[in-house]
Length: 159
View (spheres, rainbow, N blue to C red):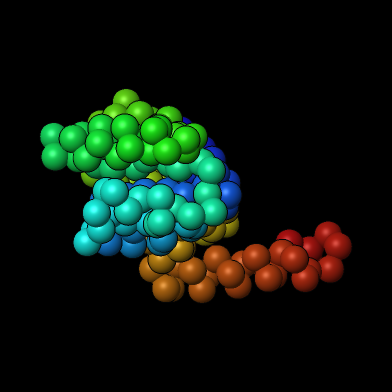
């Protein structure tokens, strides 16, 4: 599941660097709670070791178009020679799901969470770390929160 992918990426990003190509990719991942994101934008590939100082493991998360495939290959070659442990599983999972662009991940997860049928709650969306407003109007959020408060603070047998 894409949600499990996201949870695992969050966990890995706590102690590993995540490299993306540009600022839109970084912004998309930041919205999803990913940490330690670095972009190549405006940097020379030969300066990667300075950029990644303090990290042993690096997640390569470039887009899957032809341009980024070339970048991925070059970065992989450079970082391997420098002794970094590369993590490419996350990128391969995107490939298997047909998600070509990192900045589209947020939308894909929103679509899954907002259209998965009956029983969807704000709590479900918050559990994954995606803001409730992506699926619910302000009025729906207010009604849900009021209902939760009534249940949590109702006397026994009242619900």
